[in-house]
Image (tube, rainbow, N blue to C red):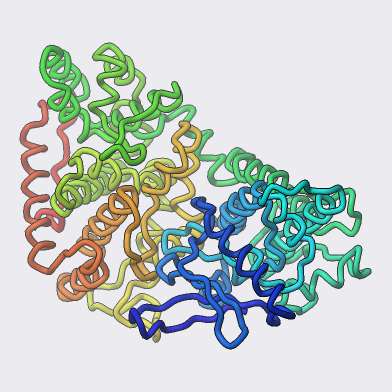
Length: 577
């Protein structure tokens, strides 16, 4: 059982898990608590840390903090339709935690949809390991080994069986998410498992028609996970994890899909075209060879095509990036310049497509406006960053949160215009389509609009490219924008602070670009309210940040070398006013 509770001692919300029935006696209760305490020592990015272990009226419980997210069942109830790539990503996260727990000798015992906890950033962690079953004798014997006792063959077999049952339950959860309804109409995964071999005779196959189209490759993974033939199933969490992770990578390359089409276009047109005046910028960089790398990176940073190409080269060469405060990898062009030198910068610049690349004049102007929005967001993030955080790192994280948007704007110019049109309210302030639940919001979020137009979330394009470059998951997590409709949690660590600062800056700049002037103060006030607690931002600090960012954008444009060909367009007025 999973309960949402209010802790009157601290005034915060907790998620409290209890077994389906209390332990049979004092010895069983002692073993239950002992096991829970041993599991609480495990630490993994995809396991929810246990805050408290206790007993109330003979019922043992474990409590975790609500700040880690909501149960996946809650998320699905509010937003039932999700792309298969997103669903697969959720299971990959959960399976990482499950595999780690299995390796440590802990089976879950009762995997349910609500035991997957999803954060506003989309990261999934698993909770309630070993809590749900009060009479798992296998666990008693298995855990004895951790106290120095020999683990016999029977205990090993029972541990393996419990782990395989967890993997089967994950397959049932995956089936539920893709089918849009619980298998056999049973929301309780444990009851559904009793209908499948070896306990039952039902066959669980994914239907041909699903809410979102499921590829044959993913369908094969799902059906194998719940196969009626025991020898055909995935026997461990790591094998199912490998299958789903492999599908995610292969799906990005799959012929006919938008992401694969984008990769095809990158082959001929590059990731992005360099801004006008590239030759002059490179010349100035060469003249700065004996000066500080900060000055060189300052010349590179405004040109997103050159910045992305340098990051690609660095990461595909498997060179580790710098760290912020010694706590996790980040991105800086200074470090790139130190590692590859001026010659490497010049070589990267020579590989770029000159402006406007594959675009006509009108589409190029729209791309330039998008680039100015992204640069403005980078400067806003710099102005909002807490003390001690590197300005260049914050700028690049804000830019990379827009990588998917930039790639779509370049490689799918017409579709990008349709997406923005679906996001923009009309000048009167009324939505293009009535939204009774939120009449003062745009018609669709960018994610929903991209799904409607392209069938893929816009962030998937940026993530696919970044993964191909070799950027690690820890950095990728920073480059995922927070959902604008989800609450902002308390950040844990530098990476989450950077992610939130960049997300706040991007939300503010999007409001300026998309909202009519009459509704802009209200839109910016929403941004302030979302981030006031975690970033200590106020209306005044946000307005000051926007003012400083506009000035930085003006200075950057004024300091840019004169273009060698066409004149560089100026930033759009709505961003500069």
